[in-house]
Image (cartoon, rainbow, N blue to C red):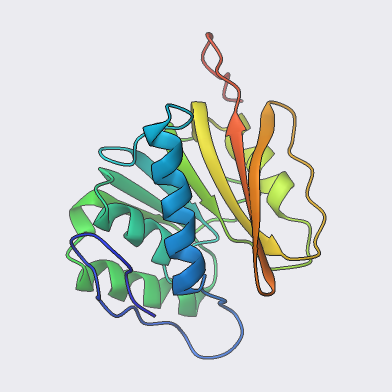
Length: 195
């Protein structure tokens, strides 16, 4: 597994052994970032350059590191698995991105309050556990998603997903056993209340 494009293009990323982590394929990751670039160009989504991103259920951190490689200003990573956290830390260090990242050892369905809202959010929960919508709603409630933010969610190809209130389905694509769903957060004038 490698970073697909940008200043870290070709950089190998390590993954823990076993089935605890299921990294997004290079092909699907490349296609996802093509979609995000298109949305930014058409004004339907935020630009990746200088964006704050969140990689929830981060695993190896491939999605957040890909975003940084392509010009994002900052990436937060949420992960609970110890082996994944070790690989994530090694990958961030290998890319020289320690100053522009933070790692949170938390459950993305029960996140802490955000220090700053993110423009682009990646969610790659374990397949078949119905965690995507629950995590997205929890992250929004805790201030992790800016108004108008894009969330890219990887779920199983046959897995059900209904966007939570405040989100609209924008696009979805299938890549083998995976489905990537793109949702947008409704633009809001008042700030989200964090409880």
